[in-house]
Length: 113
Image (cartoon, rainbow, N blue to C red):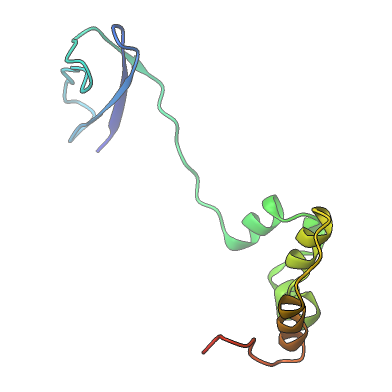
């Protein structure tokens, strides 16, 4: 059940059309201005990613950001610490206390887990 996209030649906006099967014809009418002057366009597509591939692709210093990285309590709060340092901000004592407590295995204050 494909979804086809068409660009309106009058208002230049994109409209999507759900089709029950590839063999069915599409009568494309712009859902924005009602024009029938439509040009079919190539649609984008998505790919599935695993948790590991997301960590590899998006985490800074990704060579050490495997799922095991997050099981090491020393790494708790590292992103928060890095963000405060990056922007030259002083970390509030309550944030520092919560990170330190979490690294010691304590539930941060104010969280009921």
